[in-house]
Image 1 (cartoon, one colour):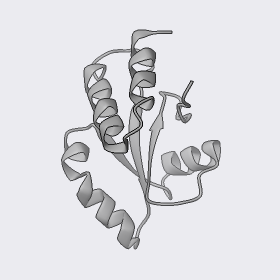
Image 2: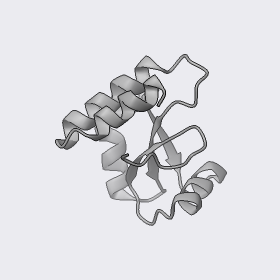
Image 3: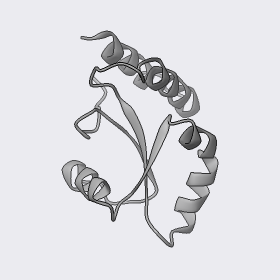
Length: 106
């Protein structure tokens, strides 16, 4: 297992949601400049969605800092992500690898 994969799995093993998310944000920041297939947090949203606007506001600083990527499900990238992973709801904050596959807990 590569270091970034171990770090990601260590975060996913944390039972408390906020602590796990904070851990994942650190992993993403740590590996942001590398060429490896690093994890990424993606907030899936759509137009005219009040909860989507609320989640966008909630994560505004992380989105601005490039820690979380906001993707509209109507965009080509958004369509690929939801189809590939069988996602049905927005807003949805998902952890993906560089191939846009959900990273499962090992």
